[in-house]
Amino acid sequence: MKLKVMAFGIARDILGSAEVDFDLPENSKVGDLKEHLLKQFPAFAGLRHLAVAVNCEYAEDEVIFNAMDEVVIIPPVSGG
Amino acid sequence: MLGRMNLYSNMPDFTPEELSHYNRHLILPEIGLIGQTKLKQSAVLVIGAGGLGCPALQYLAAAGVGHIGIVDGDVVDTSNLHRQVLYGMQDVGRPKVEAAAERLSALNPHIRISYWQEYLTSENALSIFSGFDLVLDGTDNFPTRYLVNDACVLSDKINVYGSIFRFEGQVAVFNALRADGSRGPNYRDLFPEPPAPDTVPNCAEAGVLGVLPGIIGSLQANEAIKLITAAGDALDGKLMLFDALSLTSRILKIRSKVPRIQINQLIDYELFCGIETKSEAIPQLAVKDFERRRLDGNAPMLWDVREPYEYEICNLGGLLIPIGEVAQRLAEIPRDKEVVVHCRTGVRSEKAILMLKEQHGYQNLVNLTGGILAYAKEVDSSMQQY
Image (cartoon, rainbow over all chains, first blue to last red; front, top):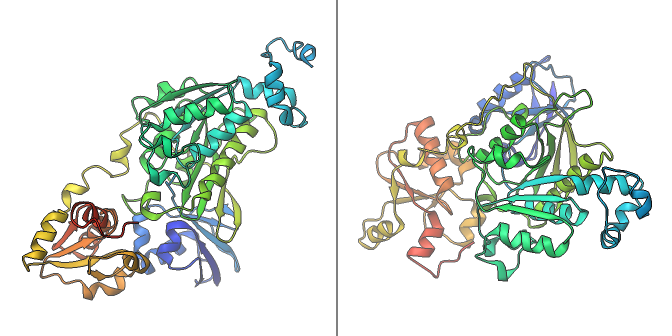
C-alpha cells in the first residue's frame, strides 16, 4: 500500500525531502512504518521517540494504515 | 460606562486612560469590558525573553494583562536583533529582562511587570510559577522545555507552548483546564523522551527566519488572550505546525497517553536530556593547537561536517561530508589515523563523532573545539563569520 509521508523540521533533514512515498505491505501499522524508517534512515534513532500523525491525528504504534493515508512525522523542536 | 462597571463588585476600576487604551478591545463583543477585566486581573509568566518571548510580551502587555512576569538570565546580543524586537542597539550587553521590562512599561504603564534575571531551574520554577495563572513557554532548549512542562503539570498551570526551527514553528496549549476539571495533554504526551543531545539544532546552530518567532510568538499571545477571556477555542489537544516557506499550517489532534505519564517531581533536566558528561567522552583539539600543527607541517586530516552552502562562506580546507551523507560516505573517513572533525561551533561535529563512535566503532576522531567560530576568533580574524 502506498503512503505519503510528510516531514517537518529535523525529520525533513533526515528524510532528505519534505515528502516521500512509501510502499508498505497491506495492513501495516504505524509501528511498522517507524521500524522501516529507522532501518532506512538510521539517524531517526537519535530522536529516540518518533511522533507520527495519521490524517492529522497523533497515532500510536498500533494504528493500522489505510490506503492513501497522509502521514506526518512531527519533529521535536526546541528553538525559541 | 464607569457607572456600569461598578456594578461588578469584584471588578477593578479602569481609569479613563485605560478605557481609551483598550478601546478597540472593549468594542469587541467577544472581549468587551468583562474580557478586559479578566485580562487586567490575570497574571502571565513568560519564560524566555528571546525570539518568541519578545512578540508575546509585546502583545500581552499591549492587551492589558495586569501582571506580566519575565524569566531570562541572558543579555542582549547583536545577533538577537533580527528577531527580538523589544531590543535595540542601545540594549546590547544589557540583561534582557531589564530592557524588556523598560520597553513594556513604556508601552503600557497600566500594568505590573516583574522579572527574574536568572534562568528557570528545578529549584526556582515552582516558587516563580506560584504567582501566575498561565505560563508561556518561549525557551530555546529541551531541558527547559521539559522543566516548564513538568512544573506546569505539578502546579496546575496552563502551558502555552511555541517553538521554532529555521522556517517552521509549532504552537500548542498544554495542560489546559477542561470544563470537567481534567487537564488536556501535555508536552510529554507528544514527546515522552527528549531527543539525543545535539540531534536537533537550536536557532544558533541552524539559523532562523527573523519574522518566524514574530508569527509564532504572536500566536502564543493570541492563545493566552483567548484562554484568559474565554473567547473562541484554544489549541487544547491540538498541535499546530506552521511552515513559513510554503505558508501552510496544519493542526494535528493530540491525546493524553493511556495510562497518563506520571509527573511527580521536578528532576535534573540537563541529565534527563543527556547534556552533561557528553563532552568529556569526546577527545578535543583546541584551534590554536590545530593551527600550530598545521604550521609545523604535521596537519591532521580534517573533516568538515557542515553543509555545502556553509563551506562556500568559509572553510578550513577540510574534506566536506555533510552529516546527512555520512552513512553513504563512510569509506572516505579513515579509521587508521587521527581525523579532526569540525563544524561552525563544535556542536554538530561532536554529534558526528558520537554517532560514528557508537554506530560504526570509530576510535580515531577528535573534535575541533568551538569550530570555525573559535578559529576565526583565536587564529584568523579575517575569516568570514556567519
